Length: 325
Ligand SMILES: [Zn+2]
Image (cartoon, rainbow, N blue to C red; front, side, top):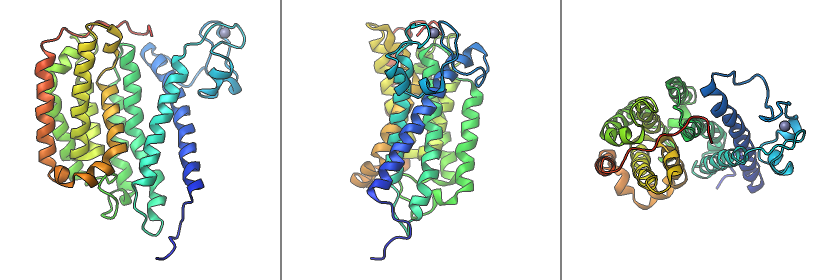
């Protein structure tokens, strides 16, 4: 067999994985800022990070994601006020999300004269747009806020434009698990997720009490983004998992109220990551199960509808106070 044109050594793979991990941590750091400032109507870029206690600017070398918090042992360098562990935790979650996506991008892309490796960074960026929009929405929901619809709209545009600019993302030689399924199929998958969202509507109403967190339309919009990106099989699987996850959290919130903070965005993110990590294995092991997209959709529809019926037996999610986390 001929040597591929661009050969990626194991060290090269780990370099990309490590770099994406660091990039994810940095994006997580930015999402911390977004989750705090967006609901308060503050500018996202100015001023730079400040200690919430003494108001002094955080030095660039103390602002390194995850590590900065660790070497200051969770305290401000100036006033020694403690800084919430939430910041490094979010940064670590974002870093792990990025790592999972990079792993799938590197290992699920078939190598055709090294072309796939040239395409892998584009695919990783494309999938990360979905992952980080969901993570941002999950953080906002955690605090009892709602993600603005313009965020999902902007993400939807990027998720559509990238495969147009890089047609390789939908090339026939790209594995089914990482391929963009074309505008028609992806549009159909997004429309199917809208249907699942309507089936889940009773559960969405239980999750977001009337007036508490907007109309829940945001959750349906996020499902459509998941369908657009993962296609019919992936979108159905992620949405069904989210419906079950949210139902479990609604039930758990009866005994332990913080469980209510895991909303639809958090569970759609979990479903998206599971599909990203497992799609190539699932498609290889059970090709017949995913061969017919309408069948996966039907199974998801049954799961979502059942979860919606059960959720009506539960009390509404307890009210969350925006900003106290
Ligand atoms: Zn301070």
